Structure formats: structure tokens, C-alpha cells
Image 1: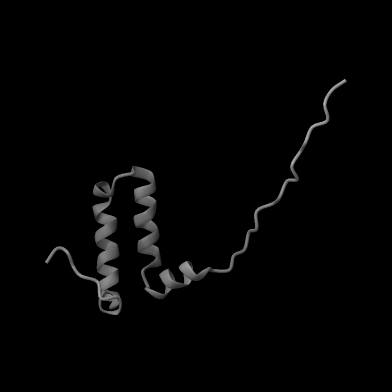
Image 2 (image 1 turned 60 degrees about the horizontal axis):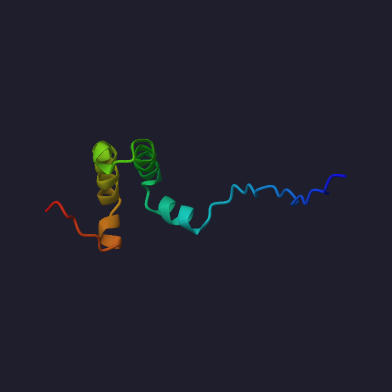
Length: 78
């Protein structure tokens, strides 16, 4: 005789398209596209040094939208 299998119920992941708090905060900066490109670059290359172009585009967008003043960010290159 075989033992009965103890199967766990399969749950489907919830796929909601509603932005969460993190998404809302990123979208409010005006630099969501640049942030996504920067993160995608890092995910692909696993080295921030290889993503300087994307990081600079994000930094310029951040300043252009006044986020450096809003968040009291310090520019480490100055």
C-alpha cells in the first residue's frame, strides 16, 4: 500500500495593479523611469560601477525635479 500524499493547497499570487506606498513615493519624484533603468542595470550587471550612465541620469533628474532640496540630500561629488 502506498502512503497518502500530504499536499498543501496551491495559492495563487495576488496580482494587483494598484501602486503601493513605495510606488507612489517613487512616482512623486518625477524620476520613476530613471530609477527603473538604474535598478535594471544593477540587476543585470550586479555592479554599480557598470551603471554610471544610469546613475548620472537619475541624479540629474532628481536635481531637475528639486528632490535634492525636498529630501535634504547631499551631493557627494561636490
